[in-house]
Amino acid sequence: MSDVQTHFSIASETRESADHAEMTWIAGGTFWMGSDRHYSEEAPEHQVRVDGFWIDHSPVTSRAFAQFVDMTCYVTFAEIPPNPESYPGALPEMLYAGSSVPMKPIERFDMNLYNWWQFLRGADWKHPFAPASSIKVGNAPGRPYRVL
Image 1 (cartoon, rainbow, N blue to C red):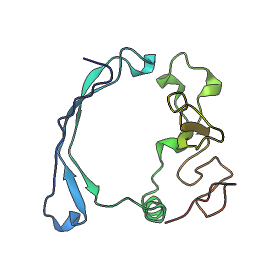
Image 2 (cartoon, helix red, strand yellow):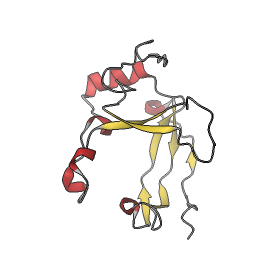
Image 3 (cartoon, rainbow, N blue to C red):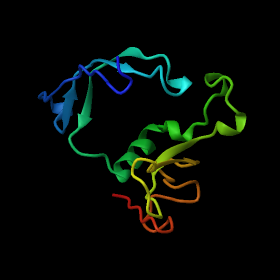
């Protein structure tokens, strides 16, 4: 199988349910995950089964997610430092909490060579551009970010 090719057998359908009136059901299925040709942590390529799930019809806003976190004490993966046991051989200084965020390039660039995403130490949903930023408008220089 090509490392670029991905096979999905997941279908969606709308189901009527009082509990899920604003949601769409995504049926479970299988797909190929990983790569034998890229980064070692992506290997081996293997088939994965995903259970079905409900998804909202519209995006979740920062305000709605904040309410969810307040009610459930949920912690995102971006807020949890990686466990060194899960990454044998990794340099300790490379194991820190953070998140990949979209970053617009400052200069002209070659579309084939530039990566628009950058991993930022300490970035998470409440601090989108690092610990000193917040989801409030105007908190990150040059990056107005709104609570919706």
